[in-house]
Every structure is written in C-alpha cells, then in structure tokens.
Length: 130
Image 1: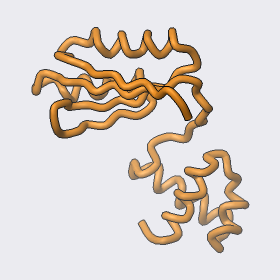
Image 2 (image 1 turned 45 degrees about the vertical axis):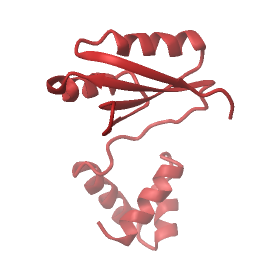
Image 3 (image 1 turned 90 degrees about the vertical axis):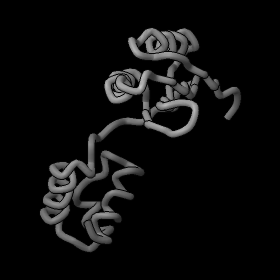
C-alpha cells in the first residue's frame, strides 16, 4: 500500500459512493488505475466492505466479559448485531458500538448480546447527548 492507496481510502471513507473518475482526478491517476487499485485493496482485505452510514438516534457501547475460550466466537456473533466491534484488554474482552433508530431497538440489540452463550458479564454505556 502506498500514498496513493491511502488517498483513495481517505476519499472512500468520506464517501463510499465516490465515482472512480472523481477519485482518479483527486489522486492523479486514470479511472482504470483507480478501479484496479480498489479491486486490489478489496481482494487483500484492506477494504472489507462498502457501506452506508446513517445518523442513528441512539448509541451505546456494550462492554462484554467472556469466558476465555469463547471470545473469538462471541466477537464474530456480535459483529452481526453491532455497528463496530473491538477485542479489548482489561476487565472486559469485547467492546461493541451499538447504533439504533429507537430505544427499543437499542435495548433489543443489547439484550441479544447479553444472552449469547459464553457472555459472563456486560456493562452498557448509553450516549445521552451529541
């Protein structure tokens, strides 16, 4: 990965729907060269997915303590529920960012995580203001 790839990634992070022609103009390459670079970044796993980010009304972070042998499996299951998931060190093993459009949806997602086999304890932090 070089500086041009980093510029392409920065553009795509700001707007995952940016046109290849516009990206090419910004980084000084042809549209075809940008297309090949994005294909390579996707194939190597640097770009994991293209997504749409919305303004969720409710956000929370769920800190999850797991049984040591279940952390990997729990993390992969939580990735299907949460917006972002991180394995962390300290008292908790996993931190999950949850976004939802209603408080009921947020609570449902939190409850779904709490009920996973191997989850020993959770601590939820709910964002109150912007």
